[in-house]
Image 1 (cartoon, one colour):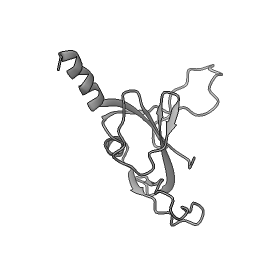
Image 2 (cartoon, rainbow, N blue to C red):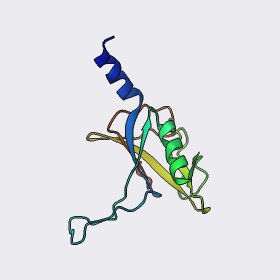
Image 3 (cartoon, rainbow, N blue to C red):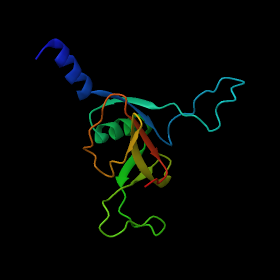
Length: 133
């Protein structure tokens, strides 16, 4: 394997990932900017190979916890036979909500459900937010 192949393999092994979630700090918007209609957040940037590694880094950085969601709430039931998806998102202050996690990869939006071994690639964005699917 050439040095270039090794460099490329290492790049994929520890991909730089941006994570956008409810605990991210708000971005400073330049005064007079009228192009932003929703609050912008600064992502947490981590190096991770998998969804599990990225969520662990987000947890360390922002003091939150993730637990797999089991469909126990009446307002967000999981259909029988449906793969498990969603997570409980718990803040350090004791608040909790159910969130959906998606991976933005180029033009695609990928739903890993609760597959923490989901492989990440350089440039992937993880979006932690409302239930989408």
